[in-house]
Image 1 (tube, rainbow, N blue to C red):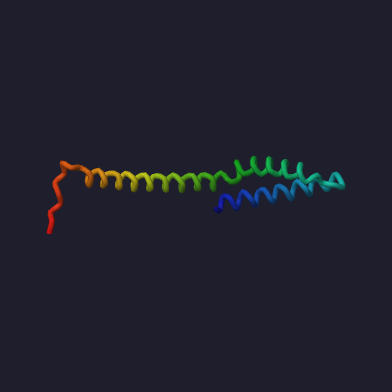
Image 2 (image 1 turned 60 degrees about the horizontal axis):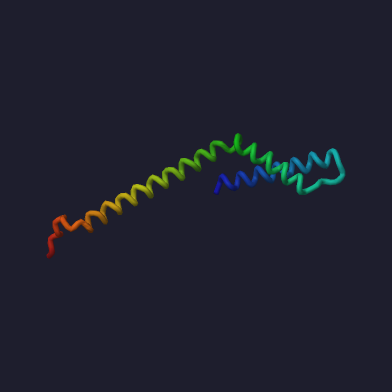
Length: 93
């Protein structure tokens, strides 16, 4: 969520700068081309500026995926033991 918010903020800042610079040279600003240029500038900028946040997001996703994989394997192993007919039956009370 933080990474996405920073990307949006970077895009808004890029758009503001592009429109501001365009107004310095002309009286009218084509919105479409301003959006396209701002998108390119923010995309390139985010690659360099937001690299630490992107790596933190990737580590977080990797950790969650490993944790889910471990849980899945534990549940699978438990089912295999429960379904094994050659396993001794649990003692009944």
